Length: 106
Image (cartoon, rainbow, N blue to C red; front, side, top):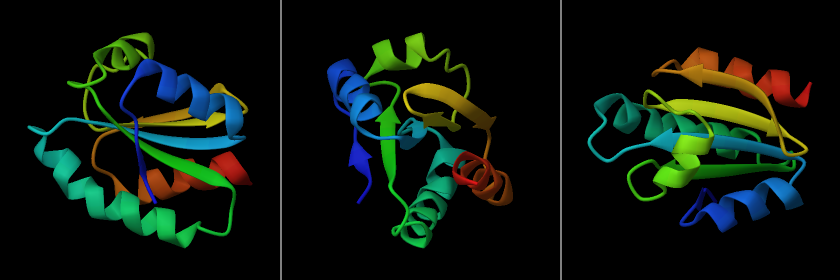
């Protein structure tokens, strides 16, 4: 299940307790984000046996996290390994997102 991040504390806690995190920085008004929603869900299902936390952060609701993570475009996907940014991708690119996740775990 994709975890909806509601607060900065939720985000920090998720990074602290999970070795691998894939974050989708999104916005309700963003059309490319809507295109990537089912892709993100499908990739989560594809990697459900790998200990990865898939999280979604609405930049309008949790703007403090968007600011600290230097989000300037949506969608932006960031992978974290043991709390440290490991990779980043902007835009609606299914193959690019899967490659980003694969680099995180392999």
